[in-house]
Length: 370
Image (cartoon, rainbow, N blue to C red; front, side):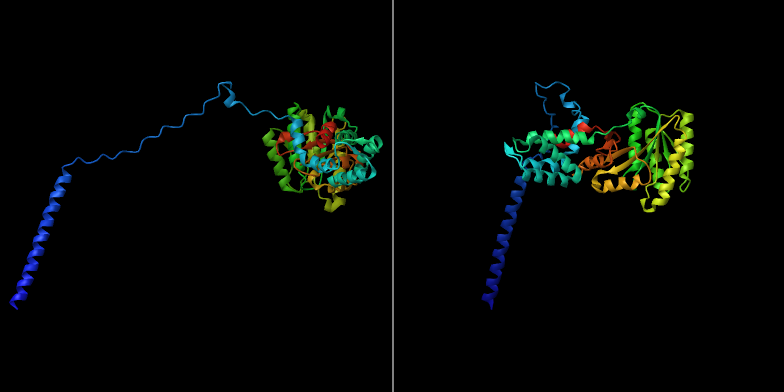
């Protein structure tokens, strides 16, 4: 028993001695470390701002701030009709090698391609016949055929106009189905006339739709021109009467008259348009009267049906075709001119007020086939 107690006592004593020595060693190390200077914590370096890129020595000092090059109307027109030009010409170009004989089969293929670009059958036949008369049976190139197509297209698009009347005071009834953008087109027309230093007055004769009156009000305020309007549901004839009287008193040069486009009720619309036209014509001694229909190019052949429908209601003296930019159906311009022999007055190729311009048959033909 005494041996066991002795062994236990010795073990505890040895453990105590070892622990004491270890504690003394740890204290000595800590004192040694504290005698050293504490390391400095380096703050992140401040990164200098990037210097602007050096201007090449050959460049002028103002090169970095130079305005982008101005794109001409002709270049914009060509870009806008790119999709139509592709629809008309790409498949025709694929039919030709460097020199190809213009035979009946090739002419038939050309006719099919042109027809599919919403030109209509008569236009396709006219264009192909021009090629047939000048080149059939001969070895020819795509460039020669393209030139003939361009010239024939210019001929079809060129309509006699009454442009001399537009240099004088005139009033224009703007007609068209709802949704083609009549009100927006009126605003763009107003901008065109203002740019030509003409005094413009707007008339909100589409009293059926409150939105039409409000939209025209926005345009009038934006452009700083006068607007004659009545409340929704008022007699359109009374609005036109007041507008023409105001135009006389204020010495306006151009009166642009918005009208309803409810083809679903043809009889009422016909009576309304005829009444408006009669009232406006009472001022024919001072204002020549025009009636222009607005068409959306993206509707393709349906645009021709709209012209037919409105010709049953009122005589049309001019056409405005909008949204030609980006559509493959620009060939409808050719169909409209060929079928109705009504001059296209303006075309639209964008959303800006300046994107509506007077129609130029040769420029359009060159953009389609050039």
